[in-house]
Length: 291
Figure: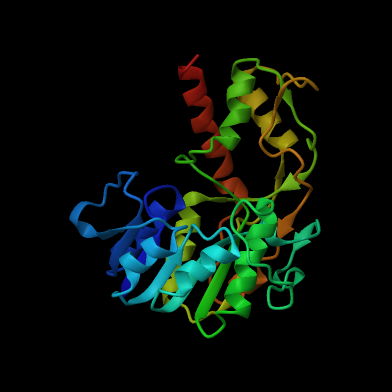
C-alpha cells in the first residue's frame, strides 16, 4: 500500500515506519525538514508545515494515499486543515488518554464519545492540551465522518528513544541526589513502549477497524514502585521535597486502560513489567555513566 506518515522522524513514528517498510509498503514521510531520519532511499519525503493550510495544499493536493498516519493532530483546526486537502482511503490519528474528561481507574473507550461532545474549532494554543485533543477527535468523527478513520488513544509513551526524558527524570534525580517534588506517589498509571506503539500503529494498516480505541501495555505501576526499584538498584535514596524539581507525571490520578476492544480485533499488548524494568536498568546505567 501507498502510505503517508506525518511525524515519522522520531519516537513511535520511527518504529511505525520501520514496521511499514518491513511489511512491504511504500512509505512517504511528511516532515518540516528539520529532523534527520535514517531511512535513506527506502522512503519518499515531502516537506510541509502541519499547521499551515497553504503549505498542506501545496504538498498534498496532487497526491493520493491508501492510508495516512497523523501523529501531529493537536486540535480541530489541525484536522480541518489536513482533511480538506488530503486524499486517502483510511486516516489514522494518534490520540491520547487525555481525551477522557473525568478520572477513572479504568478508562473505557465509551467514556469519551467524540460524536456527541460539543465541537469547537480551535488551534493548538486555544485550550489546554486535553481539550484540544478532544476537539481533534470531535472534528474527525463529526465533520469528516465520511472518511474511514481511527483514533488510537495512547497513555504515556516511553522508551529508549524518549526525547522528553520524563521517566529518566526520576532516575537522574535519584542517582544525583537532586530533590524532587512529587504529588502522586501512590497513584498507579500505565504506559506503552514506543516500539510497541509503532508496532500497533502499523498493525492497524491491515485491520478493518474504524473508530476510537485504547492502546497500552497490560498493567499499571506507581511512582512509588518505580522509585523503590531505582533505590534498590542504585543503593541511593530519593530526595523528596516540597521545594524540589516538579516531577513530570505530577497531577496524574490513578488510571488504567481497558484493552478488550484491541483484544477483540486480534492484538494483545505486552505486560508492562516485561519491559519497564529493563528500560529503568538502561536509564540507571546511563545516569551513572554521566555522574
